[in-house]
Length: 236
Image (tube, one colour):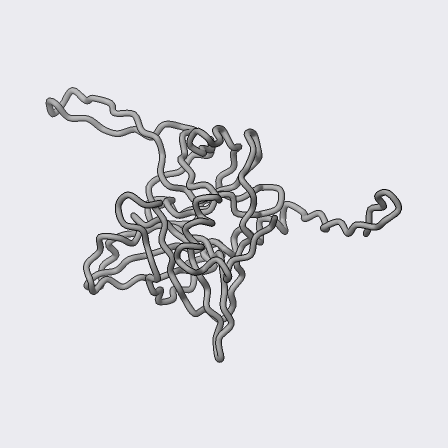
């Protein structure tokens, strides 16, 4: 299909169905698990953003948040679980390539060697009101897909109104129209609520619609500084 403009033809990208977009998003979403001495000690989420063809098997480059994988004992085993939308998932050993220390962007890169690798495309900075999907694994359990819109954009902090929970950190924020990656879930806003008993105790209650996102420009800069930008494809 082509569109004629001023006497010349310009190819038009095929329109994806919602089912095709969802398939893209789910294939690129993974669960991150940290095990120590046989016990699970931490769980989070991640997104496949790059690949490299090897002699016998492809390598997948996974983007997640640094706080998901930092501060763990030296003997901690990292795993990436693929195809979690189809059940328990396929666990594969993951190698920590790099992560930012305190003061830098809350980002980290992992590497796995699955039999197939389907990275997502990096999209542009979203606009206010753009529809989004997020994929995460709250409380270290099953996959959860949530929808919403972009509720705040830079120069303020990028935010979406889709609700998330602990364990969704590192999960992708995707353009619901084409599946392009718009950012990574970094955290959520909370309100501190006092309780009467025991005295001087409180709980932090998640604030609906206050999900903080690490935006694409920060991700691009991190990938470039880490030396992996050539393995990541951009949509724009």
